Length: 149
Image 1: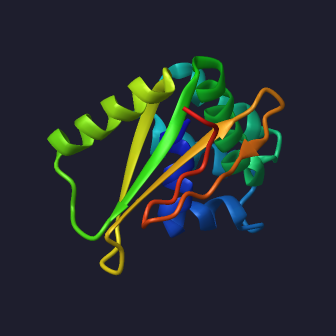
Image 2: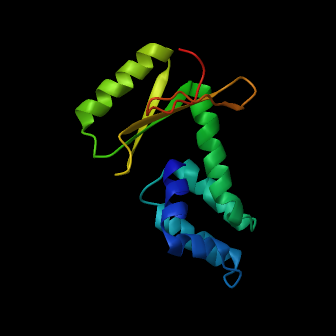
């Protein structure tokens, strides 16, 4: 589902395929399955066929995004984003992931963004039991979003 979500978001031609009213649902279904058939499992392909076959393909990005959110919530996976001025190697990423994992006693998916205007920023979004994001800002160049460790 993450691949489906990112492909639709990152490749304008796929987004245009979904949004165009010119193609009928059968052609859209064939095109989408041919794009994803060598990259996803049969269950995901059946899902794409079901949604596109019922002319609901414009909802695929939201469905994929929500599925990923529910999956991570069910597995207790929190997302942390490190924003730094330079690229981060895998060793540094692993250390940061381990520190956060230990502090919050949860699984961490670490994302990294490079922005030259920043020194270092860390975003940790925690989802409470009601599905709401809890945000808290901590200064000194570090932005932190989440509950207390």
